[in-house]
Image (cartoon, rainbow, N blue to C red):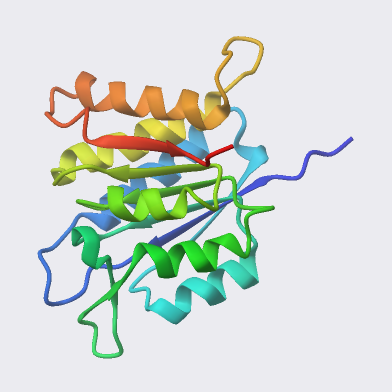
Length: 197
């Protein structure tokens, strides 16, 4: 029996009127981890850059991912910074994202928001999606990259025979530890939210 690959959709935005992030390095390191994994055939990766709000919807409709990952800037309660037509920041609220992601709750298992102050959006989205990861504070670029690389390393290596947690919980714990192992502060900034039962 052939197992259907888990689809990972990475959406990234670094609007021109915001500080520069190392999104290229983050993506390279994720792809490198996927290529070296023994379970790489169980995962399929797609990424979109300079994402505008409508691109979120289109990417989900076209790709039907199991994991949605956003990398970019967050502005707390105001929202996450996607790009407008001019390449500048356009904030999208957690409620708007929760409304969209909720339409796909049967297929989307996890949403990872790799953006400063994204815990507010994570909380809203977790009302619709089983697992959502957000940041409870500002997070340094290096710590953010270590976290996502650790997350995907853990997810790709997960084996239910050796861990009683879900794949997402296992990957989250590995990712938090990856920040600490790298000697960077911020291992307590990522927060895992679970859908209420």
